[in-house]
Image 1 (cartoon, one colour):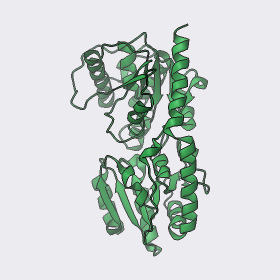
Image 2 (cartoon, rainbow, N blue to C red):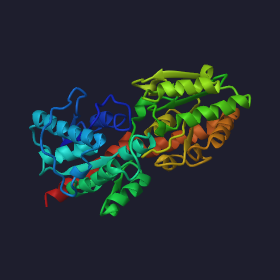
Image 3 (cartoon, rainbow, N blue to C red):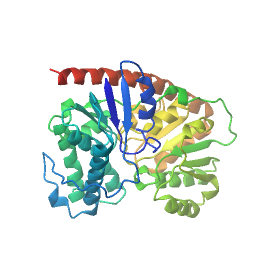
Image 4 (tube, rainbow, N blue to C red):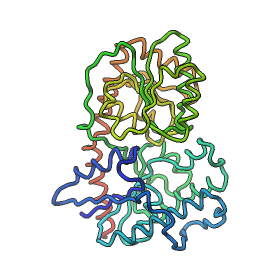
Length: 378
């Protein structure tokens, strides 16, 4: 079977898709399967000029919005690049971004399309203060779910929570399939180590939706309680300068290390002790699975797909988003009790290895692809 995995970002871009799809390719390498990856290079901007018409809604009433204008132009660019670069036959296309799926169905209308939603662009924009809830941009972006439901042979997402979210914007929510992201176990090698001072780490894009401001305030409480720690921030983003200033104002700058963007954080993540990310929204939260496979204790928020990975008190700790004191209390538990920390990390490692292994996810995808191809051939 000739497969095309249609991405939006290049494979080296951080995120759940990039932590799975490039490694998935080798699992499909056989005489029976041929998988190709495709994405829009960053240098392609303003090339597309094609008229855009959707089948389930009229986008033009939202066209005055700069956010919508950028989305539509990016779709045009993806169309232009796809027509320029792809001219072979595919048996099935699996798209991992709405723009990729819309463009692929336009160029290859007769090829079965699987569409996976890995995150919610509109929720991130709302949480980051870029658009208003129920505003024109929000209405436009949520209309895309029904459009893709209309043109796709199968809708998929990465958590039951996000499937429930999508159900408000689709006609047949019972048909949404949930397959979580998978992770190549060979990339993660837990390392026995002893740190005199507990090492906290987070790996994330520095935007308001990730709640790093809440983490800093919780760490300031830990310092006031007389607890020692070091906090490692791996990632970059538009909030970095504000967060550095916040760390200074809270008096925790000396305990906080900003690394910026790092391509393969899993290579040194096993040397830390505790992974913490107090997100305000997550469709799945791939980085929690990656931290679990590195055998770290997990502390997260009860949002999105995170509770599907973490059972509070069993393989990690959960708190409500924006609750500084609760986050500080959870961190204090794992900082002050190394034995408890080890129990949580071991349980997290076992669950992640069993449920999110790339081998298991690859097998689920193979069954899905064969089923859709069979249905399309009838």
